[in-house]
Length: 194
Image (tube, rainbow, N blue to C red; front, top):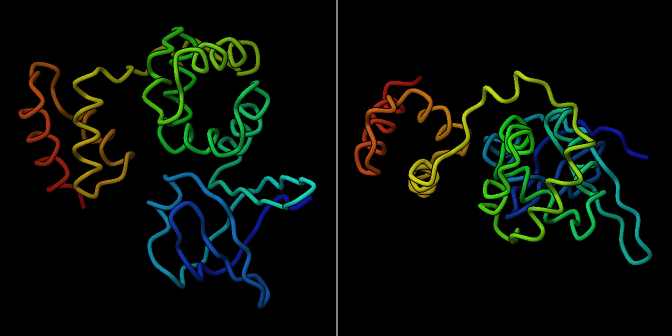
């Protein structure tokens, strides 16, 4: 089993990276957050990996943290969730937000992930409730409102990463309530962030 991978980014693709390891280019499927953080070709990268062995293919999945890898493996245990959907979940929701949604039983948060409908979201919630280590600190993480979800969509459409968009929204006062005002405030914050 390949537990981790360290090498140089040789190619950035839509849903994967090709990493050169000892003269061999290894394709690693990664969540969108890794693609957003990778920077440029030639950068050295270390990924925690999961190898899926099937009769017709070997597929490697890579993550920046062990927590993301463990969450990916837990998601694969949900009936109807395969590697692509698990990657989409991890590329859309931070581990903290996912745990908070499970703790609060907010299936609607999962439904914001492309490909996750109501039944799948409920199955994921039910399965994760027993599998994740949830504590009361997890509930302190605010869930994303519909307005903030729209603001995140706009900011990511402008080229910011989901992490940058979520971070900017945490610095926008709650009194600012319309989408346009929240986008403006978030952009001002991002403009002053190094």
